[in-house]
Length: 148
Image (cartoon, rainbow, N blue to C red):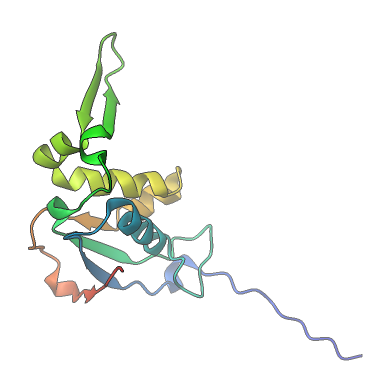
């Protein structure tokens, strides 16, 4: 009786090969772009993806101030914060958020798509978002990533 035994390979933290990718967000739709970013931060594009190990790559997003929403979301979408005190709820529309902190929209969308635990917070640290087209990560030689 010839039995073949296959063993599933599980990625180890020290064996993960991480790459740097750069994404130009100019004209990109926020939700579609951010779902791709979240997937790459998790490492789901790699064959050695393991759910309990951070196998993702580093992502640099430039021109975050030029992303777009579909429909009327720029005026209708509301970001809420709460200080914990009575009457401490603050509202900000997407248009107001874009004027004050353009990187917040991309960061908030990606953070919501990552796991809500220690692993998700570690994955989020590999995301770098910049409003303009300049970034300080040229020494890492990031590869340009096209999102269609």
